[in-house]
Image 1 (cartoon, rainbow, N blue to C red):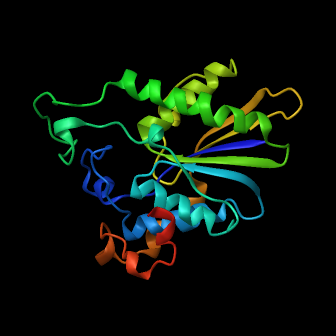
Image 2: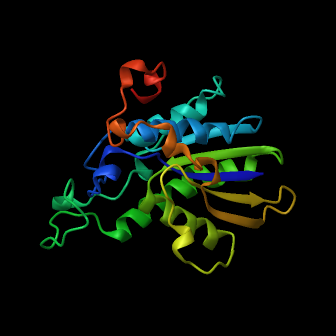
Length: 223
């Protein structure tokens, strides 16, 4: 059985290189939408049991692309896996030094709610899925980093943390669990080979442009 921890595709805030946390519900860029479509191809032919997502639009739209191949599955939204709130830094460039943020969410708070999501939703799902099935979680960089650590701790799986544990846009961690022993047997981190050359498919004039949702038939997933 497999668990996919997926970071949302490129958002307008990602392109602008600004702090975009729980306080900013921004959309994908045109490149981000292409990334989401390439990501969805990863799941072709797989037996997906369920898809969880943060309700923020950038995650929800990414998840909706995955679900185009699984029309019978209902998207399961959870506020527990939204991104960290950056307080007064929201919308400001992270390439510039700013005064201390006011109102930002503590990392311990993110860790606590992500662990609650795992214990109340994801863990039971993992223990119930069959050998050939998989579960998908679409969320955000910091939230997913905490979720990965929670899963590793629960399964007593030891790994040396490095930059490989930080997901790029539309990349994913793949965790393999033995169906018989319910043990985590492998973890492939920050997989992004499906995104090779995807940037070349977008006109330079559209790089950073907000995705035109009027052309999408999948908006109902994100309402």
